[in-house]
Image: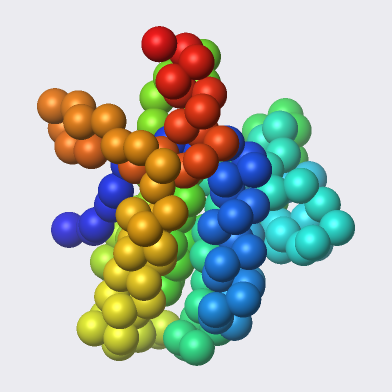
Length: 162
């Protein structure tokens, strides 16, 4: 069973998380969908999310894995990573602000026998991200399903909504 926490974020907050990741680890960030294979990788020259992508995937290159890139069969052909649920990846889903639904930080805890990774070591990596999120949260809202940790920009917007 996977692990997750609920987060309240804006794009500015997600940028803070990705800055922490880039400064602390050797990571590659992927979009969930993109128009080209090259745009699946998020670099500093483009925005984190796109119209087709509401999640990003964090790959710590210290763990053995290779993405399998496929293309959808829909009208708009989009590229995606087929093996994202079995790789050493952490998903960040952005918050939906109208109506407000929290995003999340999620690790599926599944492995692919081809790219089996040390789950104990990966859990240390996951926990470092969670500790950073909690430490940098400006506010917490308790809901029936658990706490939502709000980063600074999202907390300001959330307080203005209520």
